[in-house]
Amino acid sequence: MGGLISDSSFKSFTKVPILGDIPILGLAFRHESKERQNANLIIFLTPTIIENDDFQPTRTQFLNTPLPVIPEEKISFLDRGAPKKYGKNSQEEDLGAPVAAP
Image (cartoon, rainbow, N blue to C red):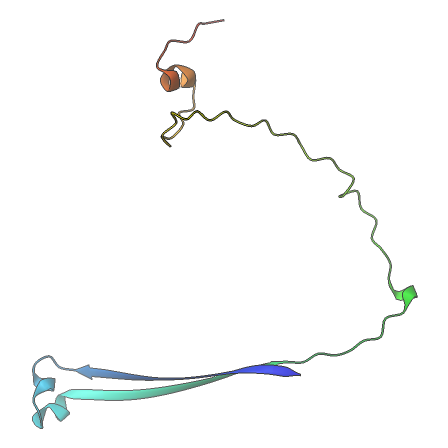
């Protein structure tokens, strides 16, 4: 068993502007509040004895599935981080030269 204890306290003041600043008369125009919070986090551990017969490995093809090959995009040293333009004429707009039609 283990745990954490958190303790915090807060003070807040509420007042009417200018009137709350007057030395004795200002007490009637301001309010002070105090708040204290306590929090406890308790962790319980329960030991359990496990026999060899209790463990059953799962059968999955996850580890045998090959990862898809994703081609890497060439990045030029002239790329200044400008957003990419996608669409019909994306090559024409990116390179600044007309694209030959097939």
